[in-house]
Structures are given as C-alpha cells and as structure tokens.
Image 1 (cartoon, rainbow, N blue to C red):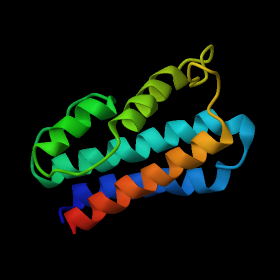
Image 2 (cartoon, rainbow, N blue to C red):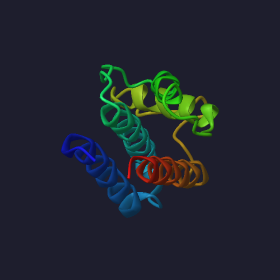
Image 3 (tube, one colour):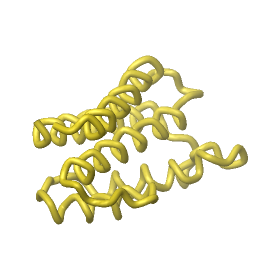
Image 4 (tube, one colour):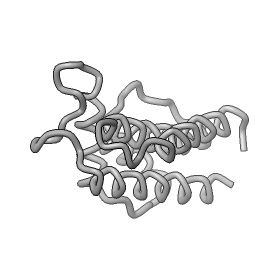
Length: 129
C-alpha cells in the first residue's frame, strides 16, 4: 500500500477514535455524525488514491461512492451515505449544527452511523491490504 493511501486510512481511524470517545454524549451527536462522514469520505478517497485516480474535491459521500463502485462493487447503504453527507454540510454552519430534518441526530442514530462508518472503513481497509 502506498504511503499516501495509508495516511488516508490513518486519518479515517482518527475519526473513528474520536467517535468512540463521544458517541454516547447527546449534546455532541452532530459532532459524531460529522466524524462518521469524515471517516467514510477519507476511506473512499483512500480507495481512489490506492488506484491512482484523482481525488475529487467533494464531500458528497454518494458521489464518492459512485467513483469507488467503478473500482470495486462494495455494498454500502446509500441512504445512510446521503444522510451523513447532508449532516456534514450543515454541521459546518453554527446555525444548523448538523441537524437532520427532525433536529440533532439521536443517540440511536449516532450509534447506527458509528457502526456503519466502522463497517465501511473495515471493508475498505481489507480491500486495500
């Protein structure tokens, strides 16, 4: 594995480590969702880098997933990817705080997002190794 690919994966693990520390803290649920999005984005970009493809300057997980699927057909839930993409974009602005249509993500939602981010990371790491 190229060093730059490894760096993308290491950065994704940093997001997972951050999530692990805060996943049960209700007032930080939007931050958990943000780091889930970041973990998955970096994992997808590791696949592109590992295959010597250009890294698009986008944060939309569905679009990145479309690029990744051209290389390998992973089975990831596009609905969750879409939700995390929207939370990421909105989390960047204080007035929105990464809210879902019903408000901040619940603890149950953030646990689901965390498990999903770990799954995506693990599957991609296995592929790249």
